[in-house]
Length: 476
Length: 94
Ligand SMILES: [Zn+2]
Image (cartoon, rainbow over all chains, first blue to last red; front, side, top):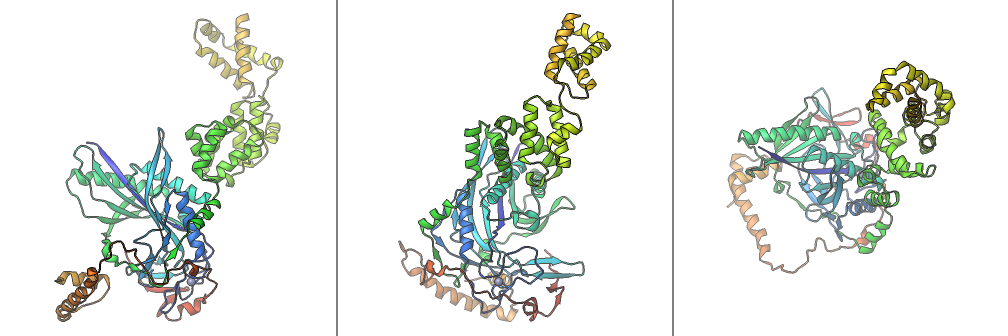
């Protein structure tokens, strides 16, 4: 039987405004507990919230970047539930009218570009933070209480863990581009819940949706989805469908655990937040905000394809991160060869960054160093393989390519006279290969080139070696 | 008529304890309130734009200059228990 996985995401993003959403307390991460608080964000009786204009600006920026329709009415509602991190007994959120309706993001699959549509984006306040100690107690810090959030709800249009991961990558990149959030999952400024079920492609039978919480990294999202896919298929096959439920990802156990049956929306008893007057947003203000946005990843991608002749895939990867795209363009200032630069970044550079789990700006490689290295390669001063070794050395030491090449004596030998002796010696030692080659075995030539490269300690110019071998074998 | 279960459910999500003796009178009052509020449905609101508040005006959206921050000591002064500058409560288990 074949199953299709259906995934929708709910993503909470903390906005990096200077102040909290309804009071003037600083919006900062990492301060000592309960030092960034006031009566409003502590939910004390008699305090009055005032909506922070900067929050609307940041939220609207995100709405525009995600191609959504910005509402001309900003209206807040109260969502009631009791929990220890929520001092007022309700969370101020947007239920009826989200500030942003619809929208979409595009992700790059191997074979196609897929559009993932958004349901909505709304504004709400963050809750306090709980720390559970070993001694049967919970400690509460309200510094986070009242930090502005946007919640982005996608349509259930992702069909694999891979697609969910690509979506999150794109989402994070976009938020970083427009500088409205720090988007650090480890600091909780980006949090993601997964809604998932599977459908039997033949019978159309569906498993019941589960909501997965407590996902603290993109890796956890991927692993939880893979775990749930299997659990849902097993449930369907055993004909044991459950109720709609909320589950928690347990990183240590590598599985999801039932938390509770999901509360119905009516249990939240939404009402209009009477303490915050609705705000009418003019189209002019929305347009004004639009002009402050930098070039978005999607537009940059199109530009990279048009002006640098890159493939859709390459342009997509290079524009995924603002820093990487700027690194690429900066490198091109020193070497006018977009294809060569793109190939190296897409290949060895990204591989190394992945291995080290760092971003380009955290590495020791500068655009100038990469350009200098590629000039050496392009001008045949060093060969491709040596270039890769030098790149590794730059990542390790931060030394300039010229210095590395000079100190290690890596300059390519492109002088026939210098190579002649080595080639001759290799031919003398491998007479069988010469016979093989003359009998039509092309592979023998490759072997001989390899032997010369080895004897020259990788420094010989391979094209030249190739040519010399052919000529010198001819003479024998 | 509102059912016993509905009242108990609402009491539960509102974190209210209702005794058996209180339940019956509560149901009656509940019904009366719902009936009263329901009368608003009789108003014809076809083609009427919703009004959420009488003073809708985005001029109210100005930068909030009032800094009302209080010290940690002040923040914690009304709590029964505290530890390391945190409010301390019984362990909350999800
Ligand atoms: Zn505050």
